[in-house]
Image (spheres, rainbow, N blue to C red):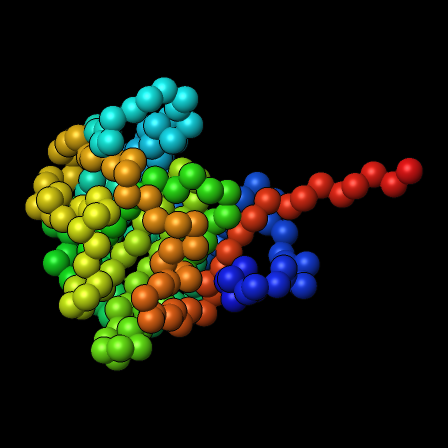
Length: 227
């Protein structure tokens, strides 16, 4: 992630991952039963719907609504970010309670976790957990997890620190107490899209500290044919 955000192009060759980013960190039950069969289909459906909106050439209203099950989407999101780090258990706040919430789909979204989302019409992918934003003026910090890929980005803010609220972004705030199979129309705002490098390259006297394994991912350029 540091090379991606540098002013100069990355010098390293990076690491090639065939057919997308993968981690060997989940057991069979979590990967195939909880995520694969229960949570991921809802997450994928939501992402594909946002993708259709982002790729549309039509003149669209400022806000569109996507039928979705927020509780299942939230668990899929958190489950995949949790899987990013080897031996990451008990490496951040609330992990024991978060594990229980992930297993039990009847539990509401925890009040210490705010999930924001927005359309992301860019190719660079970003994955980061156990990271923090800090304000140089107030010395306040916000602990965050981040997942960005075309066509949608998700930001998880922990413990709701003052000054790190983003009312211009859509959030899961109104969906905390829904049942796991309750479907609602989730708003997707097309007018409040942050720049490509937000929040990993913040503005307004803030900086980020990234946890172990935070990465930026781009498509591998094909080799030029020698004549």
